[in-house]
Length: 189
Image (tube, rainbow, N blue to C red; front, side, top):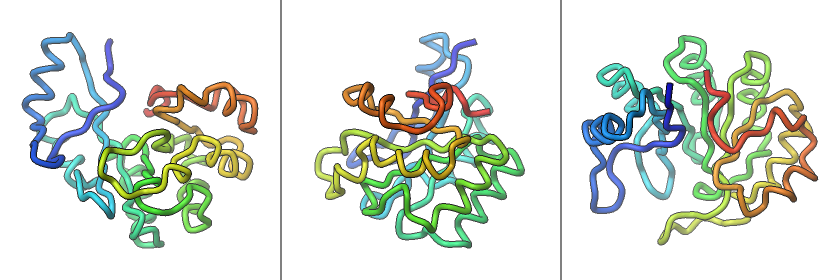
């Protein structure tokens, strides 16, 4: 079985990335499933968690991962994500801190981390570069910012896409067990 661990659909600047095109490219490449990442952010609206769930219902080979807009980090939205995880509607959560002007260690996210740690769900942290034209802060997407979360939640399954350039620094400083840190979404269930 082959799973593409990082895909997006929806509008991005002037181009629309259709789910039908994603499925066609999966067929062409022999990919069985794709992780479909919601990416609705304050500065650049994108595919919402609800939209990702709807697409996965229409295209069952797409497995949705939710996200939370940085301007909506509150009890209501965290509860909604936890409910989607409980119901099996999403397979994890991705956070885009650098784009939305917050840090992953923001205490408002603790209830989400506590739940995901307890239930074994993965939280992905968008690390590294930001898209051209976005006004976010690169330092908020630095992989070492995950260290405070890893220290506070040592059994949280973390995925850190795009961290390659800082791989050694993160492995040396992060307090999690090495098997709990992944570059991709292989821990999403």
